[in-house]
Image (cartoon, rainbow, N blue to C red; front, side, top):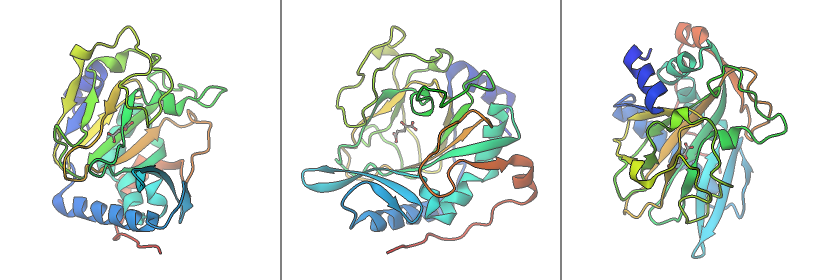
Length: 273
Ligand SMILES: O=C(O)CCC(=O)C(=O)O
């Protein structure tokens, strides 16, 4: 469970960092799953579904770029078990105010050195609520919690997450269309956004960041010589999402009482050819 102070920090600032939530062995297992995903993508020519995970691919200088793997747990049971782990799901349930939560995201970001992958300024609500009734804010607090596990140290030059403290209480603002490939920091500047307020989050492998759907954040190219991998698990209040996410089993319901009674059994990475 999160402490009262952590919940207050989440409410006031919009983001909390929980240091060393996963240990070295677990991080190594997650990295091996990422290696397996990378191998699976090697002969893929274009974006598509493979073994239950959706690979979003691009190209830079003739080389394949993995922009993200959506529902990475679809092909990697260990990642799926991490998505049900009480260290993520209990705080998510607490922040959402429901013992039953829907897991929408199990997403792998690789950010290989100089691969051009960026995530321009946005709020996650832009990706949840696509209009036309795709999203309902059932709990009145945005109904979504994002968790991000650092699999590598996030340093100033490895494309770390940047964030605006206090943005969690902005509600939805307009950053314009969020195009992952655009090099410009913001496509539209909402009045609340000021460069001077940006903080860069330096994290260690094993640390976890948690934030809500209105937290304004971005991250830029990894110009270091090391990978900057993060594993993202996102949870919604039941009934908030009205859209089908790609990947086998995406949108599963997790009941925290069940998880605490019977914690997930973890297995190793799966290499699909
Ligand atoms: O991998 C990153 O730095 C981007 C994370 C992000 O934009 C998100 O979790 O919504």
